[in-house]
Amino acid sequence: MLEKINNHVILNHIDKPARLLLWSVDQVIVCICPCAIGMITEHIGLGIAFSIIASIGFKVFKKKFGNSKIRSILYWNFPTSETLVKKGLPPSHVRVWHK
Image 1: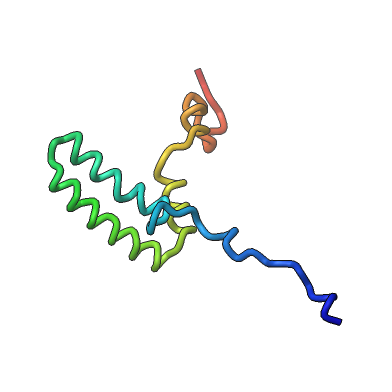
Image 2: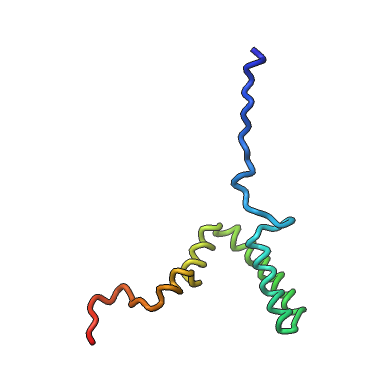
């Protein structure tokens, strides 16, 4: 009876997001962007302050709304490679073109 023990293991770490030290990748990006802009404009103190404020705000927003709301905001407000390529196309609501 003891020989028939189930040797299968269900992994629980596959669906966890990628992390850099203690933070997830999106939190690191939110922290690094204001710091980088502060370094470029030679306002390192302001960059670090905005980085801390942005990371706290992002953490609260992510806890309140989740990843799906963040993805929808990014989708609707930032261009993708498809929209940049199709920039020459007319809007979809225009049906008739006259010259």
